[in-house]
Image (cartoon, rainbow, N blue to C red; front, side, top):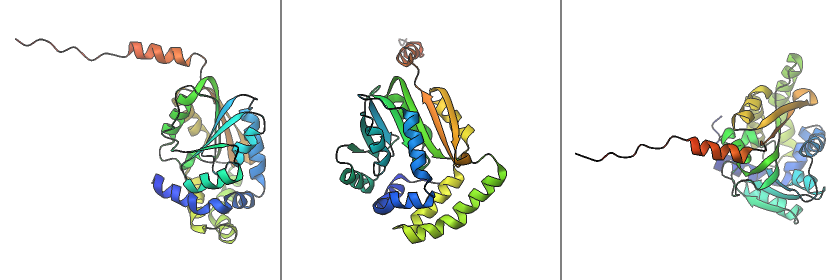
Length: 249
């Protein structure tokens, strides 16, 4: 799909008020279980600094913060940010695009993004930004809709997103048309193996995933190498230099 950031951001502004309620209904209660699995995968520790990208109203950010970690929530939707600040006043919310995070290199112990990567215009660029802001040894966790590996379940799930989700959205959502886009974004999102390759491609190591709810959702993990700073410095020194201009006759 041709995802225009301003249009997608505006769409999330429109659904911010009832977003969490709609998610709970449309996931048949599984959203809370996926959130628990994500927090466990991040494994936040007291005193750590964690970045929650595409944080929405901050539901996942609040769950991460309960462990004693300091959580910074980022989203590109002003409406989501406003709702999040009202619901979770102790969490720092920052309005920003995932492709251009307003943080320095090596700032965070962990970065998480839940159900937001598929809404980014250039997902690989966003993953590269997450890599940049992580400290060496830092943890990445991506929780995202995926493709059930079993054909029968996959067909049933596709039918659910195409025919059932619009009906539910029309009843419980403040903008049912926005959920037409969200359902389409789920159907067009690549499978687990492709996302694994993207994560490895920007530099993460120890990359792995596990399926949740029979593969409807996949939980991906990765690590920024401990020697990432040394690798970057070495690569910079080895980069070819432009030839010096030669003197004229």
